[in-house]
Length: 228
Image (tube, rainbow, N blue to C red; front, side, top):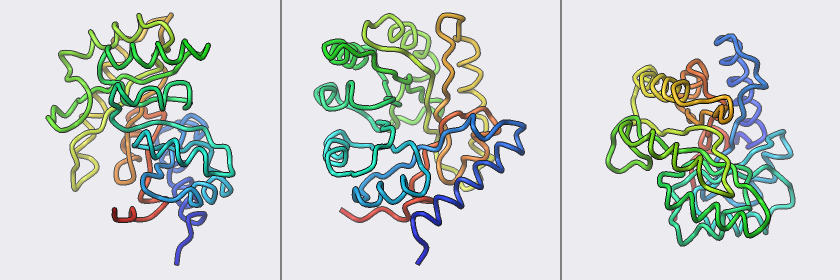
């Protein structure tokens, strides 16, 4: 049976190779190991193998795993977050990837500020236009970005997207190109938006070629998710 550590090494090598092919430094791309539904022991195993960043999709699962792990990864919250769960996440993670409304941003900022912290976040942009996916569409992106930039207690660090699934990774390239183009249009000297969170197990090489700085990889590292 292939271990998590072995799969991590394979993914790290593949990400490094994709960076080199794209003319980028491997250090410019962070792998967020997505441990959704996997036990805390799996997180400790991947961190021991060299992972530095771990992502969770559910607020209560994040809280439980933070208490249970013996390692100390940088935590990311990558799932859709309800405002009533903001208290479980704000100030508790290095980065929140999918802030899809100014109202959610305001609640996160309020919670972080109460802790004397500034919470880094990414604006969730639904470049594929899928109704079931988190994020605002292209028409609402400018307003969301401007609104989040104005929230006390937040720092907008970039954009994220989850494009429609495709059998051929090249089919999602337009979505990744669109997200980078949007970032380039709205970045400013005061708010450069350095991060693009895009790309998962099946399409991270294309995402890296398009400028991803954060790739969210779960199955290729941890294997299939446990049922239930």
